[in-house]
Structure formats: C-alpha cells, structure tokens
Image (cartoon, rainbow, N blue to C red; front, side, top):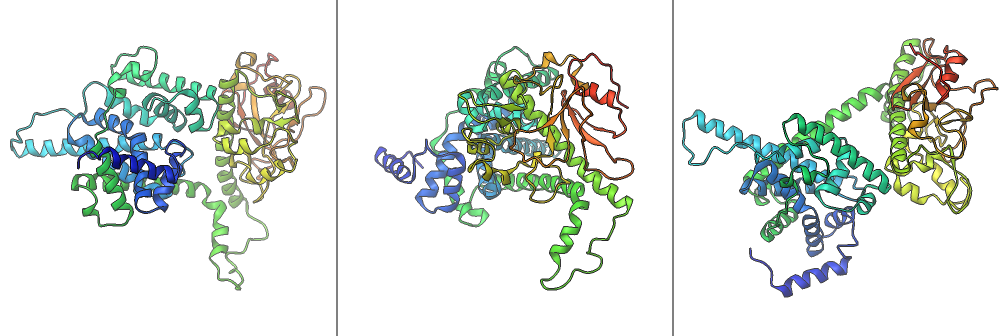
Length: 519
C-alpha cells in the first residue's frame, strides 16, 4: 500500500485532533481510545502508538536479528502482543519499557527459530542458497538489548526512555513519575551495571551513555510507512476479534503465540509463588467467600478459638516475608530520595515557602512510584486537613504490615528520631555522616502504633529515657517481642526481643563509635 496523498493524511490528522491531539495524549490514553473506540478513532490512536515507539522497537529487533524481513515480523508481533495484553496492562505513562521487553523476547524467539531451521537444513544436507549468517548483528548490540532486558525495572525504564527513545531527563521524570535527580541516579546506576556486564562479554567499556558504547543500538531506524500501516491494520483486525489467519502472516502469528504463552507462564509462576507465600493467611478468607449466602460456615471453615503454635508460626512466616519486602521497598525509596537530594529526608519536613509540617512518608511517595498520590497531597494544609484526610485510605501497601487489620490507615514502619539517629534534626543525614557503618545503623523499624501514615510522627529515641516499644506483630514463643528493621545498607534483619538496651541503642546511633555484632 503506497503513501497517502497529503490531503488524505491531513484529514486523518484532523480527525485525530478532533478526538484529542496526539501530543497531549499519554500512552495509556491512546491505548484506552484504541480499546474503547471503533473505526478511524481506534486506528489513529494505535497508529500514534506505533509512530511514537516504533523506531525504538524496530532498532531493538534489528539489533538482535540483523536486517531483512525477520525484524519487521518481530516488530509487528510486538505490537500485536500489545493488542492482546493491552486490557491487562497498568500504564503509568510510557509503554516504552514494556514494549522493549516484549521486542527483546520476540526477537530472541525469532532468532532461536531461525537457528533451529538452519540446523535442520544442515542436518538434512539441504542447500538453502543463503549465507550462514550467525544470529544477531555481531556488533554487540544484540547483547546490549538482552542485558537491558535483565535490568531491574526501575533501571530498565530509565535506560529505555532516555537512552533508547531519546527523551530528556525532564520528560523521562514525567513518564516515570519521579524527580529528575532520581532519573539521573537510576540512569547512572543502570549504565554502570551495563558496562560491567558488557565488559564480561569482551566489549569496550568507555564512560558515557549507551549510545556512546554501542552506536548501532541507537542508530536511526527509518520507519517504513507500509510497516506502520500494515501493523495498524493487523491490530484493528485482531482487536475486532477476526480469525488469526486473517490478521498477520503465519510467521508473525507463530511468534505471537509462542511469546504470549511464555509471558503467561512467567506470570503464572509469579502468581503461584505469591499465593504460596500468602496462601496460609488467605485460606480462611477463601473458605468463607465460597460459602452460600444465608448458610453458616461449616465447622472446618470457622476460626478456632485459639490457633495452635504450628499454625501461628506458619502465618507469621508468610507475614515476615511480606514485611521484609515492605522494608526493602522503603529503603530503596529512601535511597532514591538520597540520590536526588544528597541526603535522606528528615523525619518531619516543611514546604520551602512555609506551611504545615509533613512526614517523610509523604516526601518519598514519588520515589515509590506514587507520584500521582504525592500530587494529591496539599502542602498548604495539615496532614489531617479536609483534603489530606481523604488520602488516608490510599495508604501504599509498603507502609502497612501484613498483620494489620484490613482497612487500617496506620503506618507500620517508622523512623527513629532524636539525637544520634539517622532521622535526627531538621536536615537530612547523608551517607558520609553514618560513621558507624551502613550495615549496623538502623534506617527504618517495624512497630505497631496508632499513627496515621501521613501524620508527621515517628518514634522518639532519647539516650536518657527508656527505649520505646518496638515490634508488636509476632507472638510465638520464638519471636515474641521481635521486630524487623532495615539498615542503612538496604539489608533487612529480624531483631530479637532479647537484644539488650546497650546493643539496640548502638544500632540506632549513626556515629557513636560502638562495635555491635548481631548473631
């Protein structure tokens, strides 16, 4: 199909303008319009997504597969998988990182298929008349994309949006929902990891952006108009429920099926692991939910008067795993805040222009991927003001321990404040001020307290007074009085209730010079 006349193209652009300008629509909005509208509105919305992310997807496919028809098949399969999975995606702003991951998997699967075909041809001694091209480009760009795909999500998103799609730090911060300083920090860490991993493969490792390491990975990839049009038409056909044979070539259909199946299997394994971890805590709920309305729960589903020690230990084990994850999430958010501000936040902050104090838990929301919730907080009113009080029910999961009551809006994780602690004073603590060692200085602590999560209140530590009560979530003989803490190095450990006051005070102190050895 040839290029459209200028008049036709202009009318198509005007039609999209009538439904909302492309520049003003996020990826999530375009995907929603494609899913909820029919005809030209859906077509233009999906074409906008292809135009926006197509160059990056095509470069990725070419880096792994080389030139020829294979990259175009992989390109089309990537966007058609988006059509299949679009209804289950949660899109914060940019689809770029997700599309890059799918493109890598599709291209690798296509390369494996080609390798199997060549092996079969050699084994059968059949001459195909083609050169025996090794998989990939051979310049390292395929390795680069595979290593990007292996990065943690927070680093991968920054690399894809900044280095592969060419967005500015400011635009990337908007897409990722975090401060500009956090984007720069994540990008620096990601590049360092990539340089280290690529050096193990024998590639050069100069400093600077990825484009400087491997220009082939980010070289311009002209988007053939026919490819955009054929992909959009196939997406419309697939979205309308047409038979698979009418949607795309057989090679593309095979890639879609194989990669979709592998993605479902990966998700199933993840869900199974999550259910295994939390199944003990949810079994009773599931039994009650299955009973018929109006009928009493069977005796086996009713809670016993008192749980035996073994059941309590199993439940606590599930709670502990989730609490460890929560504390690690909080520690990572505090690290990102430190990267952006060159210090951890103080326990209580005040807006630059003056205003009511607010909690560090509010301050780190953007670093936890909660930029929208952060934007809803009004800094010109107190934490329990008319607007901010409404946000209590939106407590992030990482701030609430699994052992809390359903619907609780109280925080479960706190900073220790007071002289010598990391969260002491009106200014934040930086890394170099933690002279007792990052691995032996407490950053955040688990405790059952009736403190709403947005309230700027934590746990006061004073060397002259008795230590405050901590923990309160575990009740077996082995863990009574114990509590989890995250240390300044990001590690999480269970502290025994039998740990003496002297040792605990030493762990709270950031520069007391004490030598503490935990069992």
